[in-house]
Length: 271
Length: 116
Image (cartoon, rainbow over all chains, first blue to last red; front, side, top):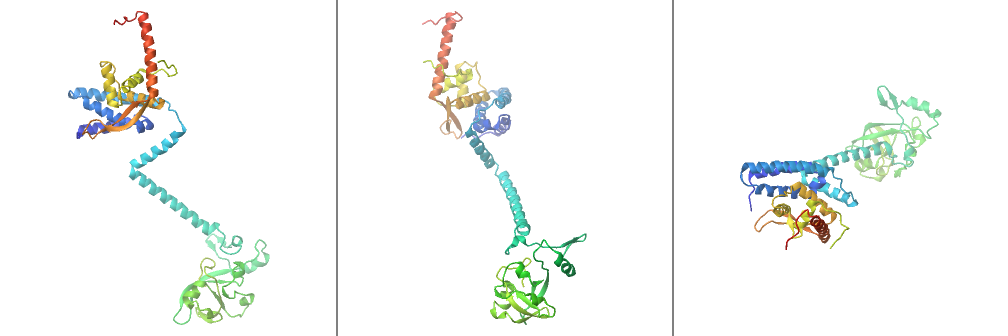
C-alpha cells in the first residue's frame, strides 16, 4: 500500500474543492473518478517541480473549462432522475451526519411545539365541552379595561329575563374550601353554582341526586355534590356518605350526590 | 459493416471506444493509451475524458463495470469502463465512414496510395 504524502493529500483536497465547478449530478457520478485520474496523472508527472506545476496549471484550466461546459450542457431529464435526486439527497445527508442530526432535532422540536400548541388550543378553545350538547355551552364574562372578570350576581339576575340567545343561564364561582370530617379534612377546589348546573352540563350524578330549584331557595339547607375524586379521597368511596352532613369550611352542608368519574366543572373541580 | 443509423461520433468519443475495444480500462489508462496511439499528439484532459464518458454511458456505448484494484497488493481502486456491443457497432460504423473518407482522399491524391 502506498502511503499518500502530505503534499499529495493537500493537492487532492484542493482539487476536490475545485470540482465544485462541475454540476452536482456530474460530481455525484464521476467526481471520484475524475479526482483519482487527476491523482494518477499527478503521480506520473515526475521530473521536478516545473513539470508538476505545469500539470497542476493544466488541471486547473481543465476543471474550469470542462466544468463550465458541463454546466452549460442540457442533461436529459427522465422520470428515473427524480429517484436519482432523492438518492443523491440521502447520500448528501449521510455524508454530513452532524448537520443531519441538527436539522432533525430542530425539525422535530418545531413540529412537537406546534403540535402541542395546536392540541392545547384545540382542547381549550375549539373542542366542545365534554358534556352533552357541549358545543352549545358558552361562558360569559365581562371585559373591562382592567381585564376579563366574572359578572356581578346582580347583573346576572338583571340579564336573565331579557336574554334570548341562550336557552339557560347559570352562574358559578370557584373557591378553595376545606372539606371533611375530623382528621380527614382536605383543601378542595370547589365550584359554587346555581342549581341548574347539572341540567346545563347534561350530566346526572352517579349517586344520589343533583341540585334542585328549592336547594337555592332562601333559608334552604346548604347542599354539596361531591366529585368522584373527592368521594374517593376524602370519604373512601363510601356510598353511605349521601345524606350525611359534613363540614365545609365551617358550614354544615349535606352531601346529596356524587358525580361520575372524570366529571368536573368548569375544568376539574373536586366537589 | 456499415451501420449508418449511428450518430457521428466526436473524435474524443471514437478514441475512447477504440481504446475500450481492446479491453476494460480505468480513466488514467484510457488517457495514457490514447496519448501513446497518437505519439503524444493527443493529450486527453481529465475533464474532457469524463464528459465524453458520460455521453457514451448515456448513449449506451460504454458501461462502468465497477471498482477494482489497479495492481496486486495496491489498496487503491479505480472504476473500470467497458465497451458495449452497441458501442462496438457505433465505433465500427465510424471506422467504416473514416475508411470511405480515406479512400476518397487517396482517389483525390491528397495522400499517397498504400504500398503493399
